[in-house]
Image (cartoon, rainbow, N blue to C red; front, side, top):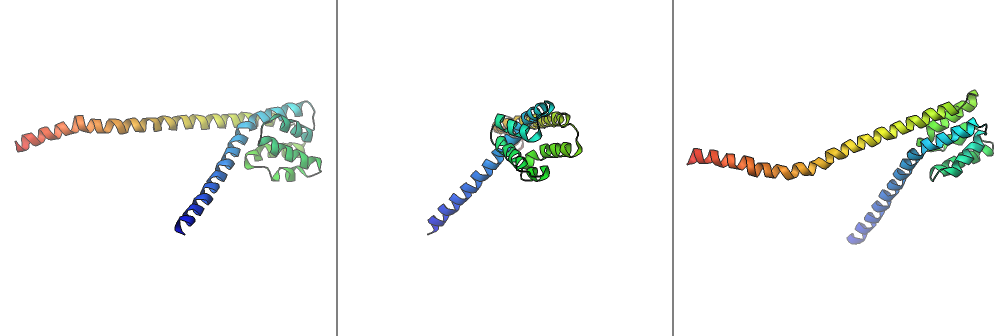
Length: 171
């Protein structure tokens, strides 16, 4: 009975962890594709394409999962939903994009400059995160090296000195 419970707990834990990995992968994919989607939306809107049609066109050009979310927002817009409501179910990673488009729609301002700025900010954030990860990797790469040299230092530096002092004191 105990083995059955252990197997059941293991299966449930593995499925929970796998679900967390899928969500994390989706967040990473959304963040990675956001700058190019902003650029494409900016080009479409600069050309005079309505926001709903621009979202549909960009959703056809970008990979999943971003395409799915943009297509859902475009579909809600075609059905007559308010822009704020259409963006309400979008993931957190797309919240800034939604705010830019909603604000531009409500104020009548051009969205293309704000979309270009959002794309640049997203790229800068991704670059900073990558640089931080590279710096952390450099530290973690040196840790095993330190663990290898520490015993050698003790054996070649500390032990002979202790033996020499012990020989002088007791010898």
